[in-house]
Length: 295
Image 1 (cartoon, helix red, strand yellow):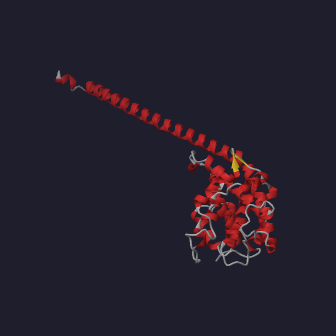
Image 2 (spheres, rainbow, N blue to C red):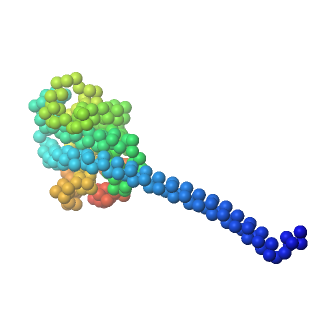
């Protein structure tokens, strides 16, 4: 019997059988592994597709509104740069007076932009924005950076400033509260509705914002005018990135915006924060940084 097993034919048959068993086992393992990897790939692809689709839907539904309020603010910021000598922003604490048109309409325009950006941010909070497309991710970075202009004391690095007091900035919690003063039932309230609310008890955040803007001018030693310049050029960069062709600003006009009525002392810190926020590689921000020409 042993001699029979040792015959070449039997040994070959045994080797073939073992090889078949091993091959079958490896095939099943490989097949299971491939099917598992394909399933994971399909689920990941579907997840990314669905998340990106939802992100695009949020941005698409709000983008038109945001561009409109950014354009309105842009017109006012240009006007303020050219006509600040009229001191229309000086209301001396008279914040409930609807007749202070320039001041109140300026506040409304700034808050309108912030409110739409905050609205988008809140609608995206349950979505995985880390896997958004490059263009959508830059859009999201823009709107998240916007609020930093008013609240981030890092803009004042290198300058003597008491960060414990809302002198030239507004505390982040007070800033976030402003969203509820301008948005109702998921829609921006009209300017007339905003004026009607002036007679109501003002929230702490809104009062802080009024005080922040009251009397802002180019002659003061305070730093708030300095970030006003940044607000103007960041708004231009946003419109250049996502606006219509008639909302675009040329290099020549961008240079005027950067230097009129004077250059901001905070441009260096502004560029640093853009880099920290990973916005410096975005096309229009790169263009803006080059135009700023900060050594």
